[in-house]
Structures are given as structure tokens and as C-alpha cells.
Amino acid sequence: MTKTLLLLPGDGIGPEVTAVARRVAGRLIAQGLALQVEDALFGGAAIDAEGAPISDETIARAKAADAVLMGAVGGPAWVDQPFDNRPEAGLLKLRAAMNVYANLRPARCFAALADASSLKRIFVEGLDIMFVRELTGGVYFGEPRGIETLENGERRGVNTHVYTSSEIRRVARAAFELARTRKNEVVSAEKGNVMEAGLLWREEVQALRDAEYPDIKLSHMLADNMAMQLVKNPRQFDLILTDNLFGDILSDQAAMLTGSLGMLPSAAIGDAGKPGLYEPIHGSAPDIAGRGVANPSAAILSFAMALRYSLGRADLADRVEAAVSAALDAGARTPDLGGTMSTAAMGDAVLAKLG
Ligand SMILES: NC(=O)c1ccc[n+]([C@@H]2O[C@H](COP(=O)([O-])OP(=O)(O)OC[C@H]3O[C@@H](n4cnc5c(N)ncnc54)[C@H](O)[C@@H]3O)[C@@H](O)[C@H]2O)c1
Ligand SMILES: CC(C)[C@H](C(=O)O)[C@@H](O)C(=O)O
Ligand SMILES: [Mg+2]
Image 1 (tube, rainbow, N blue to C red):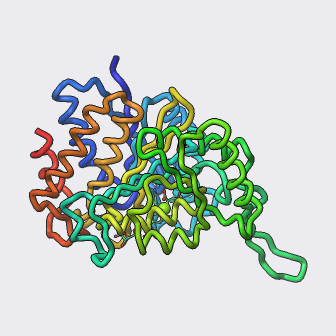
Image 2 (cartoon, protein in one colour):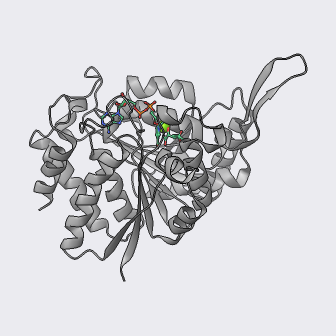
């Protein structure tokens, strides 16, 4: 049966990099993949056209699709929007509506880029870390939130870092299941030394491991130490489980161990049988948008993750990942990787290897 991929190009470099992912999908469709690609406006583009970063109709279409692939949202044009109507608020709304609580962010250093890493002193050859980032809870969503003016005229910005045991356990379960397909190891990061929600995180993750995953080697690390350890010796990690905010920051940091932020894809998944949300971990990159130089690899690899986790075609995911790897081996490089190729030329190089 034909499956549906809803494409949300978004803003800035989002449409540029998803155009390449769309070409990769088109090639596989031409070769027999039963997939229909549909489009919808999202982020600033939707604010400009419809007045809101995501419409109810687009949310309904996302929930009805087999997978959603987005580019990126946000940019200077929309920073004066009310906070709840910004492109980024639309993304949080979509993640919550799709209930995609487990965000898989693989930081893999392709062999050809081991020398191109921005941190050449660090041993990154063969680096292959999977982040499992909680995506629909924590300080991004906790109540109360907002900016208020106090009686004395002071303004106060409030966000609440909150997790329930069930929110922690469902993402920890996703991490332990994934660990069983990798090295049976999980390092969980929080700041339980200063935050009760972090302490609960540690206790619940440990309790689930003890009760149901005794085969998994689990250790805990304070998130600030992990930031340091990731730079000191990143290859000590195989699978990192962490919360929404720490996962956002640590995965951007790990991206640079692979050579570029433009290399890292992600998959946000929820309960079995529900559609996943796939997106590069980078943003709309206003500093390079419109120049046709963004690295499309993260978008292409995000499509590969959609093939693997939502579209039931791990075989094609392997092929797409191998094509990216082979293009890099052949010297294909956008400027962020030290080369001169355009976004489209990098896409051509990957398509040439895809066959
Ligand atoms: N998932 C998303 O939609 C998402 C993610 C992160 C940031 N954002 C939004 O994007 C906007 C810009 O944020 P930012 O500048 O802090 O982060 P960013 O990720 O957009 O860019 C950070 C730096 O990385 C570079 N970069 C990012 N992706 C690249 C690629 N594919 N190829 C080459 N270089 C790339 C950029 O040029 C920039 O120098 C903000 O509005 C932010 O909220 C959106
Ligand atoms: C744009 C923003 C809401 C988003 C996040 O913080 O989750 C982004 O930084 C990401 O990494 O996907
Ligand atoms: Mg981020």
C-alpha cells in the first residue's frame, strides 16, 4: 500500500535542504518505492500566508501521514511575533500533537570526515553515538510559563522544569530497546544534584533498568560533566539518554564531532504504529539562507531515518546512508565541510552514488 510522507519545508535553508531530500525520495519512488510525498506550509512561511505557524489542518494531516519530514523553522523575520505565535512554537505544538516523545539523534562520524572534524585533536574516527532525547516534556512544556510584571514593576520570566515518572519511563524504555540493537549500554544524563526533576529522572531510569532491562549496562552522568566528556573522549559513549533541554544542547555539541551541524539527522517517534517526525537537528541558518550552500546531508539522512523507523524500508535507509557515505568518500563537500559544493551539487553527488 502506498504510504504518505508529509513534507514541511519551513523557513531559511529548510526549503533548500528538503528539496534535495525530495529528489532522493523521487529517485526511490521512480525505482518502485510506494510513497506519496505531500507538502504543507509550516513555521514562518505559514505565519506569512495563514497567520499562524501551523494550522489545525496541517496538524491533522501530520497525524494522518505515515511520516513527516521537516526542514527547519524560524528566523529574524518572525522574532517580533508574540511568543506563542512564533515558528518555534509551531514546532513544539506539532511535536506535542504527534506525541513523538523519543527523539533519536545519531551523531556518526563518516569515515571520510574523521579528519575534517572541527576538533582534530579529538579521536572521532568511528564515532557513533545515538542520543535519545525526551522531546515532549521538561522545561519546554512545563507550567507555569510566561513573562509577568510584578507589583514592584520588575518583570519575571518563568519556565518550569517538570517530569512525571511515566514521561521518564516511556522514553527510557525507548532507549533501552534501542540499546539492545546496539551495544547494550546506556549513559543517562541529568542534573539530579541540583534539580528534583533530575533526581526523579535518575531514580526512574534506574528502577526501569533493574526491573526490566538487567542486560543493559546503565550508568548516570551529570549533564555538565557529559558536556566535558563529549569533547574529551566522545567514543566512550554509545547511547545517551537525556531530557529535552540537555538533549538539545548536547546533540548540537556532538554534531561538531562529526564535522558539521549540517550532518546530523533526527527521528522523533512515539508509540508503536504512530507516525514519526523527522528533521535535521539544525535550524533555518539565516546567515547562509538563500545562497544555496547549506549542507543537505542532515535532511537526506533524516529521510533515511523515516524509511527506517516509519516506512518499513530499512533496506532503502541503508542504501541512502551508504550513498551519503560514498559521496563523502569521493570528496563531496559543502562549505561547512571545507568544500565548495552547492546544496544542489551535493545532492547530485549523493544521487550519483544512490544509483
Ligand atoms: N528544528 C528546527 O526547526 C530548528 C532547530 C534549531 C534552530 N532553529 C531556529 O533556527 C533559527 C536560527 O538558529 P541558529 O542560527 O541558532 O541555529 P542554526 O542551526 O540555524 O545555525 C547555526 C549555525 O550552523 C550553520 N548551519 C546550520 N545548518 C547548516 C547546514 N545544513 N549547512 C551548513 N551550515 C549549517 C548555520 O549557518 C549557523 O552558522 C532560529 O530561529 C532557531 O530558533 C530551528
Ligand atoms: C527550534 C527549537 C524549538 C528546537 C528545540 O530546541 O528543540 C531546535 O533547537 C531543535 O534542536 O530541534
Ligand atoms: Mg536544537
